[in-house]
Image (cartoon, rainbow, N blue to C red; front, side, top):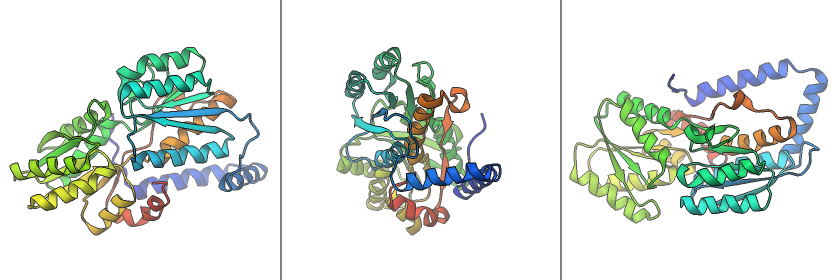
Length: 336
C-alpha cells in the first residue's frame, strides 16, 4: 500500500483542480442550482427538500476533547444542509458507548455513525442496528472492522499509514529515539499509530501509557520518562490536547527534545508557528463528520456510496510551521 505523505498545500491544489474541473463540466443551469444550494447551506438552511431524517453519531470521545468538537462541527453543517436532525452521544468506555448506540436504535434513528476504537464492545450493538435496517457508517477508528461489522463504509485515516508518515518525518529530522504516548487504554487505533511509527522510524520507539483523563499525571509521566532516559530526542502524542502538556514536560525535564503530535487544533497551530512543536499529522476531523452525514444522506436519498464501500481516507496530512499560518484561521473557527 502506498504511503500518504501529502502536504497541506499539495492537497489544496488537488482539491482546487478537482473543483475547477467539476465547475467547468457543469451546465449553466446545473451551476446555478449548485450556487443556490451552497448559498442556502451557508445560511444554515436546508439545501434539499428530502424528508427530515434523524441521524445519530456515537463516539468514544472523552469529555472536553476538542478533536470531537471539530468532528461535530462538520457533522452539524452537513446536517443543516441536508435537512437532517443530528443527535450526538459519547463515552470513552466501550460498554457505555455501546449503550448509547442501543439508545439510538431504540429511538429508531434513520442513520447511525459510530467509532470502533474498542471494537469488541461495539460488535453486537452495531449488528443490532444493521439488523434493524439502520444504515451505519464508521468514522475515525475501526477501518479494519467496519465492513465485517456490516457498515456501509469507513471515513478516516489508515492509522498505520499515519504512523508511518510520522516515522518518516522523524527520520528526516534526524531523530534517534522516540516515545509514543498512548493516552487511552484499549484504543486499537492508538496502538496502530505507534505501530506505524515503529515500522517506518529508523531509530528506537518506546510506548508510554498514560492516564489521559488526568493531565497533571500525563505531564509527570512524560517528564519522568525523559528524565530517566536522556537519549530520547522526540515525543509523539496521539491527540492535539496532549501536545501542550508534552511540551511542558519536555521543558521541565530539560534537554533538547522535540514534541510532535497527531491531530490539529488552534493551540497546536499556534505552537507550530512559535516552534514549540515540530510537526502535526492531521486527519481532518471536520471532514470526517461532514462526509459521514453527507454520505448517509446520499445513501438514504439515492443509495449512493463513494468508492463502492471502500474506506474514504481523510488523511494523513503532515502540517509544519510553514503550513500552520495558513490553517490558523480555520482552527480558530473550529473547522480544522
